[in-house]
Amino acid sequence: MKEYKIVCFYDFDGTLIPDTMFHPILANYGIDANAFFEECDLFQKILTDDGLQIDGEHCYMNIFMKYINEKKLPPFMNKDLRKLGEGITFFPGVVDYFKRSKERINQEFGHQGIKLEHHIVSTGNRQIILGTEIAPYVDQVIASEFIEGSYLGLPQLSLASISSAIGPNLKPLHFFSVNKGADVDPSINLQRKMRMDHRKVPFTRMVYVADGFTDVPPFAILSDRDGLCVGVYNPRIAGSLETGTKLVTEGRVHKLVEANYTKESDLSHILEGQFKRSALEIILKKSQIELPF
Image (cartoon, rainbow, N blue to C red; front, side, top):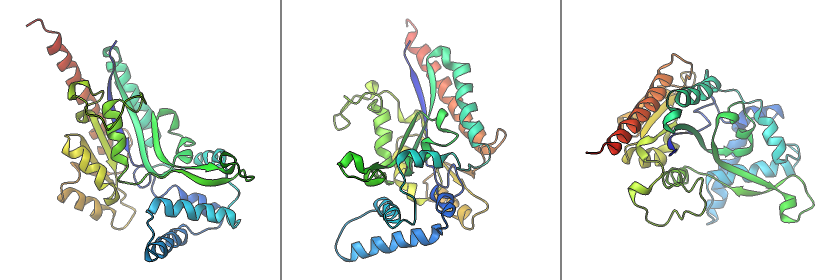
C-alpha cells in the first residue's frame, strides 16, 4: 500500500517547554542560566570583534564544553544528556497530544495508508530531547549534538567536540529533505531537481509550530509553499504575546495561540483539525485519480 505522510514540525525551547532545555539542567548544578547565556553572548562578541565567524549555536555548545573542562559541570557523555532529558517539564498536555494525535490519524485513516509524523527541529541538544517523555512519539529529531573524545582518539570520555549545530537557517533544510524523501532515503540528492509529482510529502501537508522571531526562516519557507505556520506564546512570560502578535501582523504565521496542548485547547483543535483536513484531501485526491473517466 502506498504511504501518504502528514508531517508536523516543532521547535522545542519555548514551543514545547516553557524555557530552554538548559535552564533546569544548569540550575541543578548551581549555575544561573541567564549568566551562562550572557557569557555565550560575550564569547560571540569577542570572536566577532576579532574578525572570526561564529553563530549562536556554536557559542553555547563551546561554552557548555568549557564548563565541563572547568569542572563547573560533570564530565557529561551523551548518555548522561539523554538521562537529563527525563527531567524536562513540558507545557500542559504536550505528551498526551503527541500520543493522541498520532493514534487518531492512524485509527481513522491508517487503512488508507495515511500516517502522521511528528518531527522536532531544534537548536537545542538532540540527546536531551531523545531522553524526554515525548521521544516515543517523535519520528525524527533534528538538533545540535556533541561527540565524546573517544571518537577523536582523545583520552577523555566526556563531550569533546561538536557533531552538528542546527540554527534557524538550517531548519528549512529538513523540510526539503522530508519533501523529497531524503530523510528516509539517503541516496536522494537534495541538490538535484525533482519533479513535484515525484516528491514524497507536499509542503501543503506540512505544519510548523514555533514561538519566536528566531523561527522566521522556517516560517517563511513553509508559508511561501502553502504549509501551515502556527505561532505559540506563553502567557506567563512578559512580551511573549506581543512577540507572537508581531509575527501575525508581519505575516509570518497564520495562527497565534497559547502554548497549551490539552485536548480541548485552541492549539490542539487547530493542529488536529489540520491533520484531519490533510487526510481527507489525500483521500479525495486518491479517489479522483482512481476514477476511470
